[in-house]
Image (cartoon, rainbow, N blue to C red; front, side):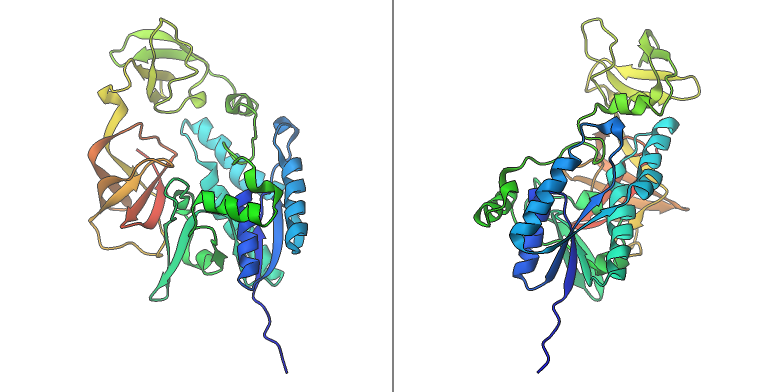
Length: 355
């Protein structure tokens, strides 16, 4: 009598509680689980990055769960596809989002391809998002825990990537995930969530960036054209930024615009200054989860940064560009960041802002 082979899944495990519980849940569901730690960055410039501790936690969890473990190194590819993208973006004067590229190019492309070649039926991650299928199309929906929902970061994925991807923690609250981990005896049950850019660790970002982007001092003007200070380089600032301007004068300033042609930083003296707000934006590289655009114009909701409350908007297409107009003006619309669209809880896709 032949026994049916268990479906195999390679789980991208970071040493944190979410991906650890993802592996646990899949094992309980009858999958043959292999935990994989992706070593993407160990540059001495980021000496405080906790990857050594994360690997120890990853190995401990795998032993506790009784699953196979692998450590895969993607440092060369990560530097080429993600870090270089980040640095070149800042050199151009925009504010890139490396997590978007990390997901699309590393986790759900490089890792997925390698896992499939090694015999995996699926890969899985600890992202808080819900995958559904309808009429042979895969969809991504916001997770049950609205405070932890990570659909924003997965907005560049395509149908083929979703076909082989599982997201087992999306149906849970974060508090439930910690309880499951504790009950299973996983030492990471109370481990703090990682924050900041995934490969830099605790190093201050401006210090990291200075190693790749040369300072180019210029003047700082307010919205009335008056010179109020100097800046070390436009690359070190982002739209809406308040801290780190070092202008002085006892009042707060907020970055409104970066004028590359004159190397001028424009700031507002009030966080509600009209120059900080925009009614719309455009994107030239929008990625629809369904693989094709819905009927346009489309009324839906959008967010222009992670965890921003969803905003009502209208989406139109003119030539090859999408134009998104908001019902209410939006603060600090930032080139290089991503706008992500939603309809009734379903995430439709995302694109880089290019106002």
